[in-house]
Image (cartoon, rainbow, N blue to C red):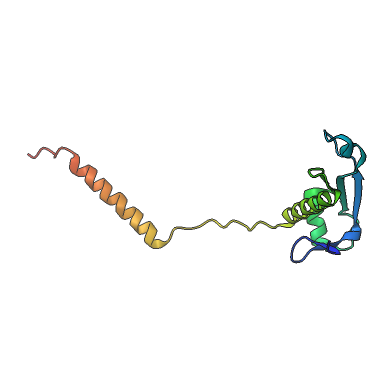
Length: 137
């Protein structure tokens, strides 16, 4: 495993800042499930992490809270569950750090406005031609 968890290009967390807990996975599985502590739970303290910048910390605190907890018990192997937990933590942090671009409303071009008015005028002309002619004196 790498010595640090690379979240984004600008954010990486040393693995010693992560707190691990291993417990028995629930559900069926016989003797292996009853004896092996394969369920992996990783906790990351957002509020107390020295590796985060002030803006990153503020964004994570706002979106995820003071600590982030991820659990993986999908596989029979503790090692595989550790990798799954790290991947889930990485994606959760990356999603929270992502900044959505501001939406700018678009404005129709002058040519588009002109074409629209022209098509409306033509359509009105077609409808006018369908009318009965005015009675002449």
